[in-house]
Length: 72
Image 1 (cartoon, one colour):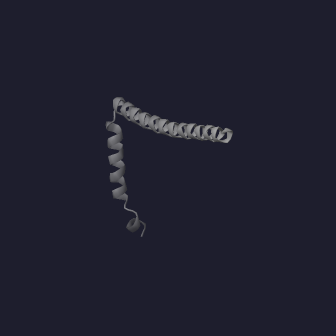
Image 2: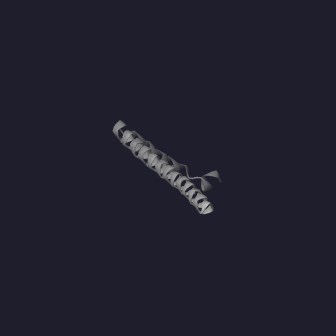
Image 3: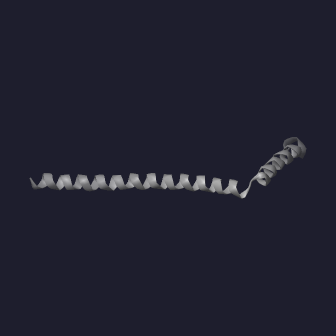
Protein backbone atom coordinates (compact mmCIF):
# COMPACT_ATOMS: atom_id res chain seq x y z
CA UNK A 1 0.00 0.00 0.00
CA UNK A 2 2.77 2.47 0.88
CA UNK A 3 4.80 1.61 -2.22
CA UNK A 4 1.87 2.38 -4.53
CA UNK A 5 1.91 6.05 -3.58
CA UNK A 6 5.63 6.43 -2.97
CA UNK A 7 8.00 5.12 -5.61
CA UNK A 8 11.22 4.35 -3.73
CA UNK A 9 13.21 3.42 -6.82
CA UNK A 10 12.27 6.68 -8.53
CA UNK A 11 13.35 8.63 -5.46
CA UNK A 12 16.64 6.74 -5.37
CA UNK A 13 17.21 7.58 -9.02
CA UNK A 14 16.62 11.29 -8.44
CA UNK A 15 18.80 11.27 -5.35
CA UNK A 16 21.57 9.52 -7.26
CA UNK A 17 21.37 12.15 -10.00
CA UNK A 18 21.64 14.98 -7.50
CA UNK A 19 24.62 13.32 -5.81
CA UNK A 20 26.33 12.78 -9.18
CA UNK A 21 25.87 16.42 -10.14
CA UNK A 22 27.06 17.59 -6.73
CA UNK A 23 30.09 15.33 -6.91
CA UNK A 24 31.04 16.56 -10.38
CA UNK A 25 31.22 20.22 -9.28
CA UNK A 26 34.64 21.71 -8.70
CA UNK A 27 35.60 24.70 -6.62
CA UNK A 28 35.76 26.77 -9.81
CA UNK A 29 32.16 25.85 -10.65
CA UNK A 30 30.98 26.81 -7.19
CA UNK A 31 32.87 30.10 -7.28
CA UNK A 32 31.34 30.95 -10.68
CA UNK A 33 27.87 30.25 -9.32
CA UNK A 34 28.52 32.36 -6.22
CA UNK A 35 29.81 35.19 -8.43
CA UNK A 36 26.73 35.10 -10.64
CA UNK A 37 24.37 35.12 -7.65
CA UNK A 38 26.31 37.98 -6.03
CA UNK A 39 26.22 40.03 -9.24
CA UNK A 40 22.47 39.50 -9.62
CA UNK A 41 21.76 40.43 -6.01
CA UNK A 42 23.89 43.56 -6.16
CA UNK A 43 22.22 44.61 -9.42
CA UNK A 44 18.78 44.19 -7.86
CA UNK A 45 19.86 46.15 -4.77
CA UNK A 46 21.21 48.94 -6.99
CA UNK A 47 17.94 49.11 -8.97
CA UNK A 48 15.92 49.38 -5.76
CA UNK A 49 18.24 52.05 -4.36
CA UNK A 50 18.13 54.09 -7.59
CA UNK A 51 14.34 53.86 -7.75
CA UNK A 52 13.99 55.07 -4.17
CA UNK A 53 16.54 57.85 -4.71
CA UNK A 54 14.65 59.07 -7.79
CA UNK A 55 11.41 59.13 -5.80
CA UNK A 56 13.06 61.15 -2.99
CA UNK A 57 14.50 63.64 -5.47
CA UNK A 58 11.14 63.97 -7.24
CA UNK A 59 9.37 64.71 -3.95
CA UNK A 60 12.00 67.33 -3.08
CA UNK A 61 11.65 68.92 -6.51
CA UNK A 62 7.85 68.98 -6.24
CA UNK A 63 8.07 70.58 -2.79
CA UNK A 64 10.49 73.24 -4.07
CA UNK A 65 8.21 74.00 -7.02
CA UNK A 66 5.22 74.28 -4.69
CA UNK A 67 7.15 76.71 -2.46
CA UNK A 68 8.07 78.85 -5.47
CA UNK A 69 4.45 78.95 -6.65
CA UNK A 70 3.31 79.87 -3.15
CA UNK A 71 5.80 82.75 -2.95
CA UNK A 72 4.67 84.27 -6.25
